[in-house]
Image 1: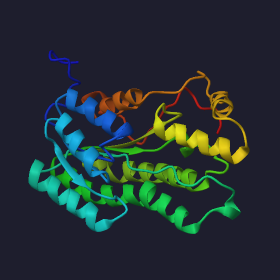
Image 2: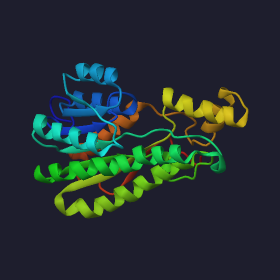
Image 3: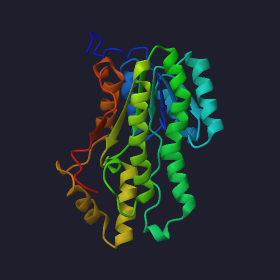
Length: 262
């Protein structure tokens, strides 16, 4: 920490966060704002964007579906105009996707899950990297999941997208290292909040048990027997983007209490 209590290297750093107006994305934005970073956030919820921007000191806030290349391009064009460049990207956008047996899954729901959770990360990295190169280096964070390393029965679209993120991240770490760009993935586990509540409820409904019984079943597979908070993920992201993370690249950091299986 420096004398102001900020992580070294974060003050004034220009960072884009996808799905930054709610959930984990907003928690990361709040943490980075606290350390003096300059932020650009995107989301698909106009009201949430307006509220988040106000809370974050009037930061750039753009409506953007990361699966839509035109909207992604507009977001990064706005970043270049408003911030004059970019030092870091947190590719956070993703959706839970459908829950069900493989033979019952709707192919359109499969495509939508991968379009947002994996292709969206590619589209954003594709535009962010030239800006970060022009800045002399920086960092990418790709948001994975405990499902990036464990098969996830009845959640195959989600798991496929999250496994893909590891391949994307590790490939970019090798490709971009010579350009002084660090690339890592954060793998949250069972994160306390409305989204995880919905996932647990969907699985409970699918198997015919109560929500509480399914929650207990989920936590049996976590060594620490507890959920993690969005703030746990946010502080990890801040560390990776700061000078403390200057020699961390190509890593998948589990913030999950050690999820043993899904």
